[in-house]
Length: 174
Image (cartoon, rainbow, N blue to C red; front, side, top):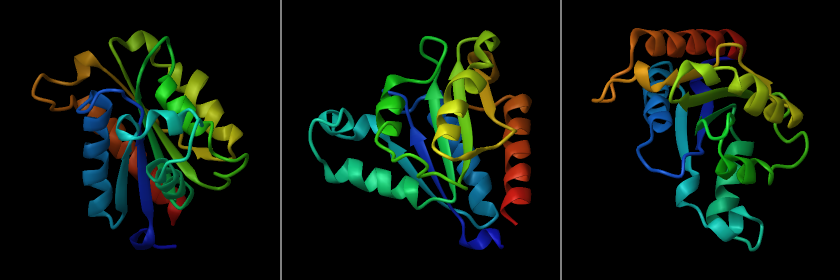
């Protein structure tokens, strides 16, 4: 299967626009588009809060859910809150039907203030995504503040992690 027909959706779980996790997604998508992937970003902070809490219906939330369900790759991108991903991301994922991500690839991206929470991906988002049937990439990306310069430029470690994820993704999707 060629990567030319593949689509990736990124779910931004930060309550703040322009977050570090969003910047990393942009770097990833720059790489993915170079190998033929189409990309879409879903910024949860811009969606209707009542609909995210399942209090009412909203076309924006429904479209975001549909986009995730139609993606070949889903990137979950979140800052670390309380040693895991954000509640904003959780309420969105709670709306996905059981096994709705069967066979889909997931690349978790998480950011934090220090390397001490680097296992939060394995203890938090990865089990949730597997419970929905997804295949979580081995080369996940965790970056802490010391790995991103003030101008937003990534450290060599972050660039290397993105390259490793892309290489794994290409091998799994061919």
